[in-house]
Image (spheres, rainbow, N blue to C red):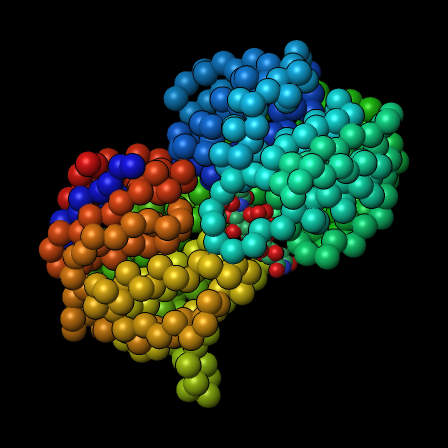
Length: 434
Ligand SMILES: CC(=O)N[C@H]1[C@@H](OP(=O)(O)OP(=O)(O)OC[C@H]2O[C@@H](n3ccc(=O)[nH]c3=O)[C@H](O)[C@@H]2O)O[C@H](CO)[C@@H](O)[C@@H]1O
Ligand SMILES: C=C(OP(=O)(O)O)C(=O)O
């Protein structure tokens, strides 16, 4: 287990370029399985989860060529279905959440797939029912082995169907869309998730020859085609990383310019930071965050305490609530952070409380933060990173804190943030990997 030693309390300064989006990359990489033609993908982040998925695809027989540090060419013209029966495949499938999205493409193109319960953050129950209900509606037959091994197959082609999803699952929608593009007939998916990750996936599939209407909405209509061809695709910048850098700048009183953000794709993210009193300036497609000594949380019009909560897109992504919470600890004012989607994502506040933050964990979903208005600095401690976003929130806290902190289990952070220690060191942060 690696750790970061952080000496906090220093203002940072400079420019930073966000990496390609982790959660988009995981969808797009799985989509290469839908065609035997080459697919070239650029702006691929070099992070643990993405590297693991590329390795999984390679071991399944996909030809993988690295054209430059962030650009790869994939060709799935000789997929080895027998590999799915090996213990190595099972171990790789368990190692990340994104592996779940091979189900839709494999079922659609090869008529079968199997997978253990995928990995990812332990942040509460993460049911896969929506994935399988959708794939079964398309004609897939599911067999469950124990509680955590799934086999799905179809005789002949999948067929289009109408479905109203019980929840707008991000990876579930991706799986169903990738099944439906090669199904016979028309599929209608209502209550589809529509995060930018999914919009990007759908746009890429259209370039491959798929027929999809309603991209960006929660009603997708897909007319299946017999085959898809190759294409080129470039990943969006990672909106969660952009939000994390905004939070980092605010907490450490730093002036940071975040380059090439594709601001129009960020949804509510910039305005949510503004509600915490953080100034942001859009300079072309860059976000400039000025050094601020103080920032004040807005109230509702009637003066009551603000709530920041997550929602399916175009609501606020749950993946930024941990960062927003940590930023609020040094704001002036009070905010209720309400994490609606996941049950176990707020427990990391114990560590912030140990560092001197004023937080009341009301229940597993809600925490009230009473900001310190920079009157008392947090102080450094030793802590463990429980999940990817809590991990980065703790890193931000440590960089703002007085003295030395040690963050253990930073493999969690490495799942989604590319060389974060080196990139922040370039801005003046003092971080050492132990
Ligand atoms: C690899 C990847 O892309 N992971 C992301 C993906 O995970 P993932 O696709 O696994 O998450 P889902 O969208 O399936 O669901 C997230 C959680 O929210 C609940 N839920 C979801 C939709 C809904 O309408 N009601 C509801 O209660 C689910 O039961 C689940 O507990 O989307 C999540 C939600 O944005 C993000 O946190 C993850 O970073
Ligand atoms: C929860 C996340 O990732 P995963 O779904 O891969 O666990 C995340 O990216 O915040």
